[in-house]
Image 1 (spheres, rainbow, N blue to C red):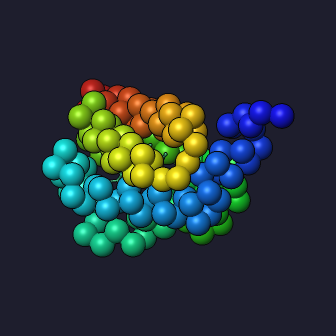
Image 2 (tube, protein in one colour):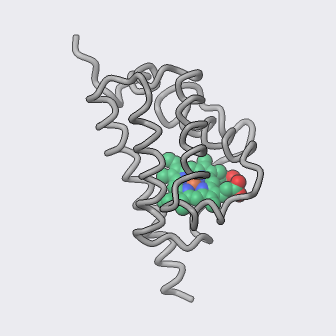
Length: 139
Ligand code: HEM
């Protein structure tokens, strides 16, 4: 049977499980450190990204259908609400997605999974932008 990403842990497996997701997150923040387009969003983060890296890693494991590591360690999370206080417009959303696109491109994932993953990540990234803009408009 064909693999359907999004079913059970198909996406988690396609991303290489916990080790694969850890590599992806590490490369993602490496890109955030060096890409000029990402300088503004890098500046929103703490200097030391160790905990931030772990948080995104834990979140993505569960989000992709693997073990839900985030909540037991850091508490419940709703991604758009967790970003509401930040100033996220299209350039910030796109900078985040650019770091992810570069990191995803380097991974030994199936090409159709790379495309699927980027389409899926657009959804919470866009919701972060919407929540942020709503907060700014309401101020
Ligand atoms: C849309 C553009 C985005 C920007 C500019 C952005 C930026 C940030 C910043 C500045 C933090 C705080 C880091 C810290 O203080 O440790 C953060 C936390 C986090 N981000 Fe994002 N982010 C974006 C999108 C996303 C998306 C799409 C996801 C998930 C798919 C995500 C997952 C997380 C997680 C899990 C945390 C930790 C939250 C917490 O500590 O409560 N982010 N993000």
